[in-house]
Each structure stands twice: as C-alpha cells, then as structure tokens.
Image: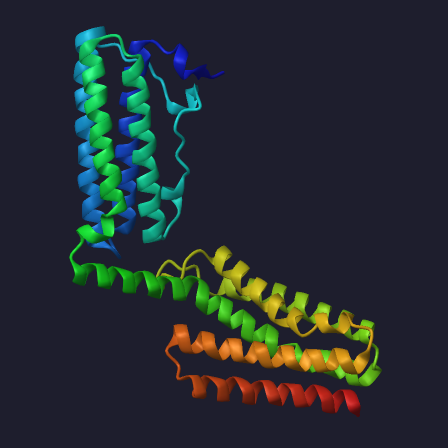
Length: 318
C-alpha cells in the first residue's frame, strides 16, 4: 500500500524529509567510498555533500521534535506514490564519473522539487520557511553536481579523466577488441572453406553462423573465467564476458550475412568488402584506444587475416 503525497500530514511530510536526507547522505557516502581509490578529489566533494545532507537531516529533526515530539514514524519514499526514486547505481563497482555526476544532479533536482511542493502545502510558518530554505540548498547542490568537474583542480581532473579512460579501455575496449579480432579472423577459414567447397550460399551462411555463434559463446566463457577483476580493475567478469562474446559473434556475422544473397559470386564479393571494413575497424580501434601506430596495427591485422583467409580458400578449393 502507498499513500498519495497530497494525503500526507505535516508530521508525515517532515518524517519523510528526514528519512530522505538520511538516505541521500548514505548514497553520497557510498559514492565517496567507491570513488576514493581512483578519484580522491571527486570523493572529497561527495564527502562534503554527504555532510551537508546530515546538516539538513538535523535541522529537520530539530524542527520535528519541537512540533511533534520524539516519536518519529517510519516513512520511506517507497511508501509514497510518485515520490522520488533512487536507482541503485551506488551498488555498481567500479563507478563511472559521468554516471555518478548525472545521478547526483538528478537526486538534487528531485529533492528540491519535493521541498517546494511540501512548502506549498505547509500550514505552519516555521515548517514552510525551513522547507523553502532546504529547497534553495538543494538547488545549490544540483548546481554543484552539474559543475562538479569544474570544482576540481585542472591537474586532478585531468588525472581522473585519464583514470576513467584507462578503466573504460580495460573493462570494455580490450574484451570487445579481443572478441572482434577473434570473430573477424578466426571465422574466415571455415566460412570461405565452405564457400569455395560448396558454392552454395545457404550452406555457407549456416557454416558461418555456427562458427560465429560458437566462437562467441566460447570467447564469452574464456574471458569471464580468465580474471575476476578484483586486482586488475578490469571490472565484472560477467560484463567482460558478455562484451567479448557479443563482439566475437558480431565479427563473425559481419562477413557471414552477405551469404544470404543467393548469387554466390556477388555474395562473396560483398563478403570480401566486409572483411576489409572489419580489418580497418580493428586497426582504427587499436590505434585510437591501444596507442598502436595505425600502419603497424593494420599490418599486423591484415597479415593475420590474409593468412587465415588464404587457408580457408585453399582448403575449400582443394
């Protein structure tokens, strides 16, 4: 059962506000704890925001006790229809800087809106005055959340952004690139062997589909089981495995899909073009994220792909 906000008494509104401030303090503390190792300057700002939430909590509690005594009913935001909700982003480790900043901005906007609505319906002057002041304070917090990156010294912000980039590379780019390379290169041999052995586009498509899906499943398990991420910072193994497996399947399906075209030579020509695009994309990703010179990356990828490609054609044509 939930109660509509308009049906809450003044006592219940204050109790809800106290509970909300306590929850927000815990969320900011969780942010600070999660970010402290990699982003100490940002963590320090969230510590200060948490302390301000404690201040708001104490102000509300003092007013509540003056008006209604020591008994504080247990009212949570999930008990009120349409009240602010908090997605459990603080449970995700590691946390992304941009996601946390956006979340904090939304938190403060929603809380400020709640205080304004509560102030409009408050009949007691002292309650209305406090809620109005708290709405203004939350507006300042929202602005702070929006400008959070600017509040940090430029050198610290640059270091934190570089750390965020490295974590993104470790957790998403590396497993995705590994999968894309495996799917794009390892499936060339069975696909083109089947193509030149049968000259049957449908049979070739089925072979390529099986190779892509099988490789995706295999690579997903291999990546997920290779490292739990606790020491290396590579993130959750399930996420890495899913990224690696999906990109492996995508790499294999890219040059498999052209064989849905019923004309063999047209389908093969399109598949050749897709392979060239895949190898170029892999080279670009290695250059952009892995700091590998483009010509070196292209040479390595093209030589490996050409060898596998030639093996498939020779085996299929024999």
